Length: 315
Ligand code: NAD
Ligand code: UGA
Image (cartoon, rainbow, N blue to C red; front, side):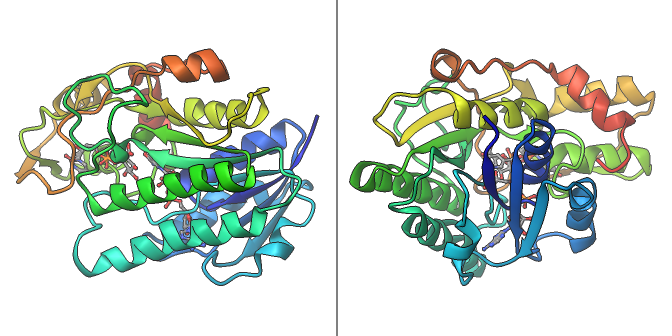
């Protein structure tokens, strides 16, 4: 049955793609975003352009740290909480305060505001960064989370808040631990977006470390499908569960560069920079819990997803 959904972070990479899919399925969406200055507002406006013309969509330029959340939640039965201060490598030093405010304090405010409301689901965008450098791969949800970046600490704290409000107040939270999401409109700081633009413009590609680090890269359509499944499936309590959402294969950064060279017919020029504090060496998701409970199965191979970025307009 169509729902009225609140999508936070709707002007962002994942939030905008999610809102588009919700509307395509007949739901109505109130999208909220404060256009944080982590990257250019014009890119976020671009993300919103197809949403703004749709009858089922409305938008509020509001900051979750200060907004009147009760009015934003009016009539909503499903909340997708995707607003955050992202970025693993930039979360050190004085920036950390912003990560705490936007990722932890804002999430706690939102959970307080939904307490006691007739929600059917509260889907939180958690992160593979909660695991840090896990000793055994692929990680399962039972792996002890030990973030190695301040960003990961804040994502884990917010995930714990979702669990806490589920147990104490029956808020129907589900947290999705997304593994490095990519695809058209990816955030401009992220690897694939940087690589595709650099190759297109014949600029050097910056690689951190030896490039042999691996990621379980997840295509945006699969990430969106997981959020919809998490909102819709008839999950039994207890609420507060967490699920790994990965792309189904683990690939090194060097391998991605080779694939891009083949796809574009160009030779990448590499600018090797030191490995960055906060970057996990490898990530790899065991998605069997999401498969069993949510019906999640990633559909898009890395080659197909990368091709979409190479062929597309704004990566
Ligand atoms: P994004 O930066 O493109 O989108 C996040 C949006 O949230 C931005 O448009 C920003 O303006 C907004 N926002 C930030 N603080 C806000 C606040 N206080 N009030 C209102 N809006 C606010 O990032 P993304 O890559 O789309 O990530 C979306 C979510 O998924 C985040 O929670 C992120 O931590 C999580 N996640 C992303 C990835 C990934 O690979 N992109 C992986 C794991 C988890
Ligand atoms: C991504 C997102 O940025 C986080 O918001 C998210 O929470 C996280 O995934 C996650 O999975 O939880 P990251 O894996 O660092 O973080 O994603 P990318 O920025 O795409 O980087 C992938 C790899 O490429 C990293 O090893 C990074 O060091 C490397 N990289 C990145 C480069 O070598 N060069 C670049 O210019 C950018």
